[in-house]
Length: 108
Image (cartoon, rainbow, N blue to C red):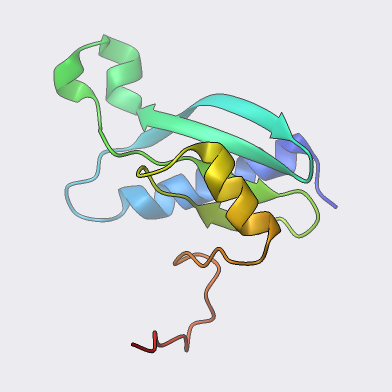
């Protein structure tokens, strides 16, 4: 079991990884929600937080969920509510790029 401080470190690590992609600016946590079994971390571009300028903001920034028991981060989506993604995770139906095994190959 991890605490909120440790979960924040996990989320910040996920944001650093996301920011390492070309064209993605440095990202920073803006809000944290404590939920049963996890924390939900919302974020925005670090530059936007400094300037407040819409031109520095990022869009499509889906929350990161960090599991309280395992410390595993999960990326959600923007098409549905956070509650939907939390339910998917609780039901074992959630598979994001952070929680899939490295050898995962989708079967279509």
